[in-house]
Amino acid sequence: MKPILQKSFMGLQECEILCQYTKLRRATNRMVKRKQSTGTVWESHGTALTDSIGLTYLHRAQDIFKKDLSLSSSMIKVWNKGCAMGWHLNKWEFEYVVCIQISDHAWPIGFAHGQDNPVVEGLQYDANIITPIQGDAVFFNGAQTYHGRKRLQDDHCITLCLYYVTMHGHLDSKAGRKKYGDEYKTRIELHGEIRYDA
Image (cartoon, rainbow, N blue to C red; front, side):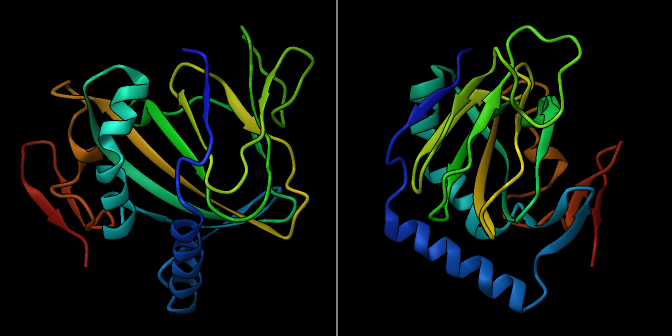
C-alpha cells in the first residue's frame, strides 16, 4: 500500500502529555537507552499508556487500512541529534504501522520504490518522502515497504509507533505477550506457559 499522511491525527495537548511522559520515564529510569552507530535512542515498548493509545485509535487505523486489525504492540522513542534509520522492513508482528510525530519537529521519513538493495539513510532519487509535523501520523505497511530516515538535525525528536496485525491471524498474539501494557514482562513460551520477567 502507498503510505498515507493523516494531518492532525493526534491533538497538540495529547502530544504535550506524551512529551512530559517521556521526560518522567527517563527521569525514573523507565526507558531503555540504546546506543546506535548514529546516536542514542531512548525507548519504551508496550507500556500501559502507549498500548492504551493503540487500542483507542484501533478503529481509526482499521478505517484507513481497510482491514480488521488487532494491536500487536506500541513503542515510544526519543531520538537524539544525529540518529538515522537505514532502509529496513519491520518484522511481520509489526506489519501495519501508525507512526505519530509527537514532538514539535519535522523529521522526514522516506519510502523506497522497488529496491532489492536499498541505500542507507532513507533518501534516494526515487524515494517517496513524507514530512509529518507534530500530531501528524503516517500509515504504512512496515513489513512490505522499505522505510528509513536521514540523520536528525534537531536536538531530539519523539515518535510514537502503534503496530497492528490482521485480527484473528496467526500473528494476533500481542507480540508474544500475555496481556497489553505489561512492558513485555509476561511472555508466552513455546508450549503455552507464561514466563514472568521481574
